[in-house]
Image (tube, rainbow, N blue to C red; front, side, top):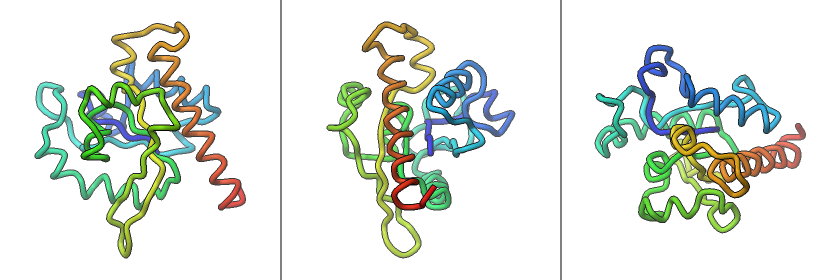
Length: 173
């Protein structure tokens, strides 16, 4: 499961997360991980576009929290790949300030979190990894080693490797 922050105008019109240039990055990373949109689920923290394409407010995130937790419960992923600081702070509140989130991107092992959703009977825990949002990568594009694009791709591959291992070990896939 891949989760971003909020839909932009194009995403809102098409009712599909990550379209346009950000969507091209998502599709490229999925392909480099041996996957596609058809093989997974992509969602946003909030379901509708905030005015002026701004980041969603805390109250907007709160109003949509049941929705995103129901998506997580329905999809039931082993790994949640969180794209960007807004989604990170919404899904894992209390895990750091925005400046600390920037340090976590690309640093996988020490910053794998457990995401707990309410669940119908008991809380459900999942591995959560955080990386750069595609919009940030567009603004800071560089393919040099250890740059943001490289770090993001490494995180994506780590998420897919963990998800594949889970599928093989527990689901026989």
